[in-house]
Length: 200
Image (cartoon, rainbow, N blue to C red):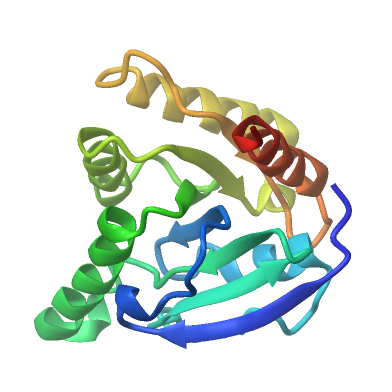
């Protein structure tokens, strides 16, 4: 897939204010500092499209970007950022859940995981919740340039083994490096194949 245009459309905290129409939406989510904004910028070839920050937990809004006038890329707030305080975390949870459960146009959710870390309970619980609610999702391991290929293989195997303890079938698994522009074709190819399957 070639990205010809990527345009910011709207930011909000209320799912009812998301764009109207029935264009498919592909949303990106992950824990703070997983490299979400960098990945979005790499996929769209636009350096400042999603705001990258050294401070974790900066995305507090549902951000819609229109791609090729065909589909939306949605940047969701990160989950599990401890320094928010209980009330802040609760507010974020409401924003995320209302979008994921209430947005009919959500076609697939990309759950971003840092390939350097072992399976974290918060991620496993979040994916479990997606499964329970029948939300289609794919896993994207980020920052693969930060570890050796051997270590990456080990980490991915450990992670999939952990998932298979509770999942009969694994979701699609993709790997990426925003810095080295790895995984771009695979992720966009996956989106394109899903878009094609939706066409009458």
